[in-house]
Image 1 (tube, rainbow, N blue to C red):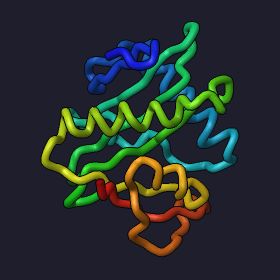
Image 2: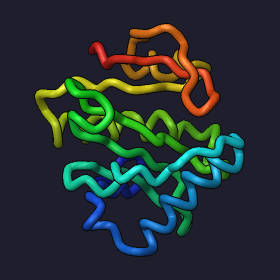
Image 3: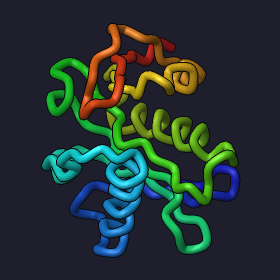
Image 4: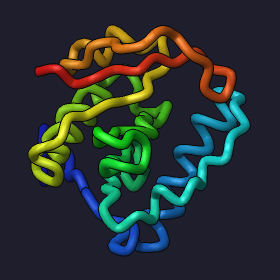
Length: 155
């Protein structure tokens, strides 16, 4: 799918080729483990679930945006979930993060049309997610020693 000149790809695990898999894992590890110095088990088997969707785009041969959409029952029993939302450092400040969320939420509607989205967001990103229709539904809690909050898509 194309938006704003970007060619977005949405694939299940079995549809990913080895280069795409390497690129998305490298991007996630570079940001969540190395940049944020958060040592956690990124490989949680949710990536391989047959209904999990991997949404990403490349710019000039570099994966610059990625998120995954998880079906009900993996993260939350009654909600689908968006997670591992990440923008490569070379693409930050360009609005790509907002485009990623717009495309990701559209894919939620396409793949899981009758389900509500719940996320576990880093607390400092609350206003970012508010701009995409999410409302805080929990107190702050620590996830991998980083302050997080639960948020539900309300509109």
